[in-house]
Image 1 (tube, one colour):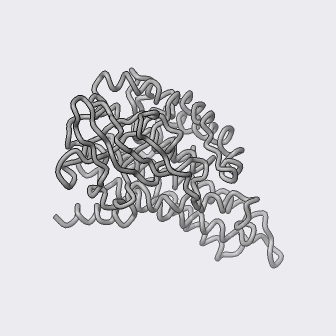
Image 2 (spheres, rainbow, N blue to C red; image 1 turned 30 degrees about the vertical axis):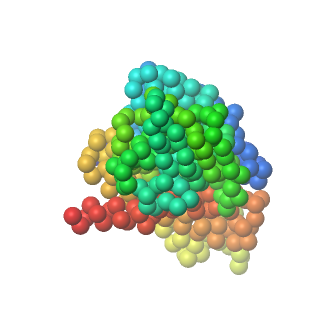
Image 3 (cartoon, one colour; image 1 turned 135 degrees about the vertical axis):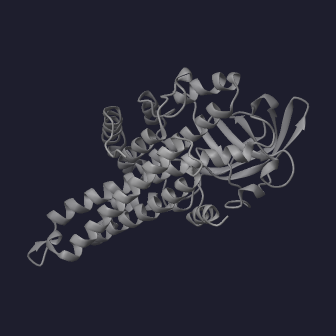
Length: 378
C-alpha cells in the first residue's frame, strides 16, 4: 500500500485549496448570513473542472477518480462547507446521467452541466419517505411518448434555481423494483417549488419542496429502463457518501487549524491555553480522528474506483465515521474557543451548523449502520 499522493493528486489538491482560500472562504460568512446562493462562483468552480469531476471528458468532464474527488471536496470545504456540499450534489447528478444516460442524453445535458451553464438537483427524498426511500409515492404514468408525473420531493438542494432535476419516481409495482429515473427540466408545466426552508445551516444553497402536478415528461428523458431507478439512486449515493464525508473532513480540518492557532494565542492563568495538558489531549484526539476519517474515506473511494463488491460497505463506514467525528471535532474546536466560538465573528459556529446535517443526509448514520450490519450478517 502507498499512502503518498501522486504528483497529479498533489496539484489537484493544491488547486482546490487555493480556490477555497480565494473564492469561498472570504465570502462564506456573508453567504450564510444573507442566504446567498453563489451561482457565479459555482460557475468559476466549473472552470476549474469541479462540476464534472468524474464525468467523462468528451462532454466536458474532468474524467478524474473518486479518490481525486475526495481530495477536492476536503479542500473546498475548508472554504465553505455548504457550497462545497452543493458542488458534490451537482457532480452526483452529472455522473448519473453520464453513467446511465444514452449518448443522445449525455450530449444533450452534460456539456451544460459540466460547465455549470445549467445546475442540477437530485430528487429522491419525499415528505413521507426518507430513510425508507423505496416507499416513495411520486408516480409517473405512461401516456404515449410521455409520462405524466405527480407527487413531491422534500429537502431538495438547489430547488427553484436548478435547471435539471433527476427524479426517482414510481412507474411500476411497490418497492424498489417499481422505481424509475426521469430527468425533468426547469420550465416544465406543472413543476413548482415551495418556499426556501429556514435551516440551521447550509444557508448558501436553497432547499425546498419540489412539486409535480401533471408534469408531462418525455419518455426520452428516462435514464435506463423502467425499474432501474432505485439501483441508480443507491449507486449515486455510494459516491455521494464519500463526498459528504470529505466535506465533513474539510470542515473539521479547518476547525482544528483554528483551534491550534487559538490555543497558542489565548492565555489564561498566566500561560497559553495550549500549554494545559487537558487541551493538548483534546487537540491530539481531534487530529487523530481527522486522520482516521481521511484514511477511511480514501479507502472507500479507492474501493469504488476499483468496483470492489464491498465498496457500499466501505462507503457507509467512511460516511458514518467521518461525519460523526467531523461534527465532534468542529464542536470541540468551538468549545476550546469558549464564548468566542459561539459568536458569528468567528467561523466555528457556522462550521458546526453546516456539518450537523451531514449525519442525516445521503442516508442517515443509523441507515449506514444498517448497511454495514447487512454485510456482516448474511
